[in-house]
Length: 396
Image (tube, rainbow, N blue to C red):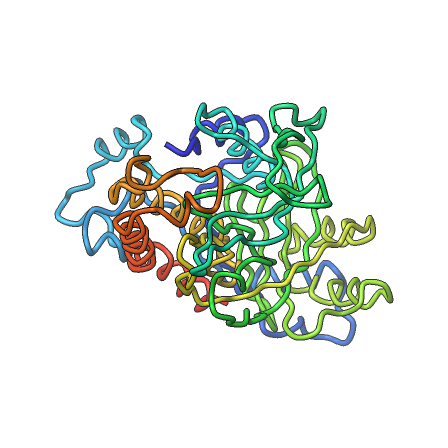
């Protein structure tokens, strides 16, 4: 429905199959001796590291026991049934790829919908009526580009009374969805202030390698290294690239002074030997990137006429990569609830209005329906968000 299958399929040439995860615990101690050779260090690591392979199940869990990883309960899951699940596409599958390319494809699919009008711009303010209800936004629009000719900006003659800046337009809406992510500047406009908590930072580099020859212990598996003092992630994102993310607590070492590179070189000894050389070479090439890891408890938008989704609403540590999963499930759930409550019915709640008075005259029934949607959304999203939140924070 959201086009995820199509978006994923367009990545087939560049994405990588993922069959599960490998969780690895490096050795606690360094090899004996005063100055062990590199070969002795590698041998010690390979001999003393502990690991467990977590494969994706042959099909989605169908019982309480299977949800806890106990398969073949009561002889339900025969080899024939598992083969049939794989053949019919019911078996869980994993693909790893550049997230930006996947998101761009989803964006293109949304633009292609006949009832979607895309406006490129930056929201400068939330517009409210006399009762404090959000009825739209003011935005500074941008013209279409050669790269994105399908994106249209509001025509200059569409004057909504914003003076003197002719680049700013006012867009009215019966519902404003705030989805501006981690650095949301609009969150505080629609919900009572509550601070995000910085858990740590991720520092990453891309390791280059020959086509489908990722230098990892188990190809087609994501790797979680239970290093000290915090975990490290390694996963292939294209046929020739494997990403490593190092979790760093506290103040991030300075990249400008070289302290960050020195820190990363220091954790190399905890990496699988097969990956270590490629990692050190990537550090020498540069391109080290960092991002803050934050958590935020989800709270329903206080303002009528607005709703938050994704990282703008709720965040957890990205160790398990759950942010995109929660955001997409938020979108699916919100869409279903809007349809169930009839909010999208133009006779109950106008999708857009020409002026503020039209918004102020919306029926009480429509406003009540929207309030029910927001309440049900916050209640039902726990089914998908709480599990991922607990898993991510507990694992970290």
